[in-house]
Length: 472
Image 1 (cartoon, rainbow, N blue to C red):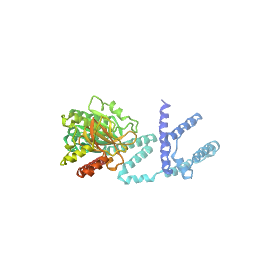
Image 2: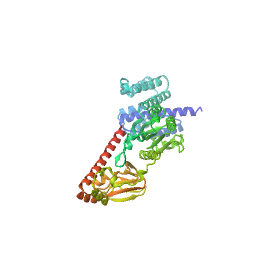
Image 3: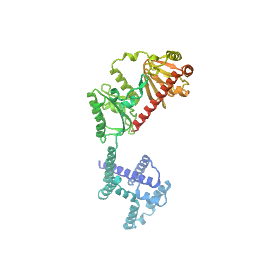
Image 4: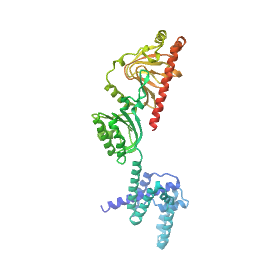
């Protein structure tokens, strides 16, 4: 212990001294150092010094500043400084012994004055940086009246407190979106769902950000606690979360328990695979007991999967509606109300009934297909393919909805994929059949075009509303 404690103390002190010198040199030379390389080099140098009876050392601010101010800007200047010091020790030590201590003190005073960062004194006059100035002042005072090791410890401790203070002042809630704004993507019987429906208002989505730790746990609880009594589904998007600790998971567990008491669910999505700290968040949530298969907290890959799960839960909870299972007839479409029997018969002759099994595609992105589809029965999910295998959920269409409007209008193929979520039946209207129908029955063709335009307009409104909600 008599050797180990001083060795560790010197190792910490010299490492801090070297890294501090490197940071100052970076600022003065507009460069960037490799901390690991610097410390490895220092360690090898100190081991070699000890083997030949020398004493440990570190990168020193004074010599570095003098070297730089004298014009030394390359690695050779540092190497030559060491060579000259060795030569002075071997050849000039009897002469150097006669140098007065007062002269050496004067040199140190000059070097000390050159080392003062006068710019940091301006921190005192600005309220935003006054606490940083206090940290600098505290380190100086402890170094003068105590020792360098204590000063380094005080500096690190105060810096940690300032960091925690800044984190607690930042908001962990980036956005809050009501379920109605997101479920507006779904349509049934040719019209958009009413976002004010009670089943849609039972869900809320929070996009979290920053660090979820003991400093922001209270803020997180205050934001989520009121939702446990007014919403059945609370979805937390974790995509922008940088860190997570046990205190924050304890708050999330409390929120989950409150929701469970009210027969509600806590749903996680967009969980990062790995945080900058190396923490595996999904595994951490499972290990801490927040997410388990046996309780009412679930985790999904992205927000779209979470929304689909919530919708499936709502459909299961809703009373059976046998009307939804009956295939739609064209004459039942509200947009065709008032059309003559001859026009309806011509439209029925122009469309092609198709049956699609669950999981199969109604149409595919990029394929030269300009057909317009009317959903007779079932559910169809329309998504936009992104990079790799990711997809963005555009809408979910149900009985009576028109889909494929974009490809039908621009004749360059569909921009998205349409996948049948259940066994589905559709009417397919090709562009050629539509053109022939327009020649014979212009009125019904105009009604179809108006519905296509309304469909595209609704999609644009939903997209704008979603962007506004996500941007806060």
